[in-house]
Image (tube, rainbow, N blue to C red; front, side, top):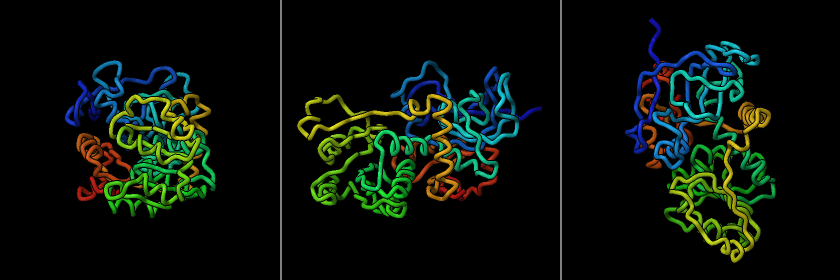
Length: 344
């Protein structure tokens, strides 16, 4: 008999405890779809927003997870550019916390067969996020001075390396001296421990009172007001996450008073909505990793069935780098002492 396949399913919004490991049936792929056996999936704060209902889903139960990597095991009608055995990765649609899944073929990107699944699973959503933020939302150059909150997180460490390669001046924030040092060794020019220093005052000190050209903020409510005070006149505030909660409603007149500032709330998914845009973005990320300009580091590694533990660590801000879930059959090759440690 074939081995049963499992997935994390959510039957009601709530804390990490709602992440239930259940046996599921995965049917045959329909037209334009493929079935993949997943080896690794990335864990992102976006998954927390789905789990809690901040980003509501159309129905229950649903499987969270927005990036992963694995091997094609079945191809549906009309799929011509993928074949059984291809190694693939993706960043959308939802359904990643699963040993097997169906997915539209046009959302998949082929990866080199020698490319580690764990690396591919962690780089798709986070890497392409960094790419659009640095290349499209605000085109960063060697003359740019930027502020990046949560610089030691998974997205932050990729951003530090990418912006360092461009030659920009990067001011990062982190919550501990250890995280600050991690951001520094990944290319961050200046790092502020926001628990012991006032990040607004330090930014003004570092920039000689000028302020930064752009703030990249995935924290949200707790950093919004201070971030505006870090910007130069006509600077740009980019909110791309809500780790501390959503930015509350505010008077647009504040932007005028603080120097004709700009504010935007972009998402990755509008930047990779077409097949052509997806392939362009993914190719840039793969090239940066293969050329060694960006290293993708796993902060902690868990079995897929341990997703609740991964979410607890993420929300407690116990993690640095990226978090990866390995399918339980793939995790067997990881020594138990290394799980949860980031050692793959």
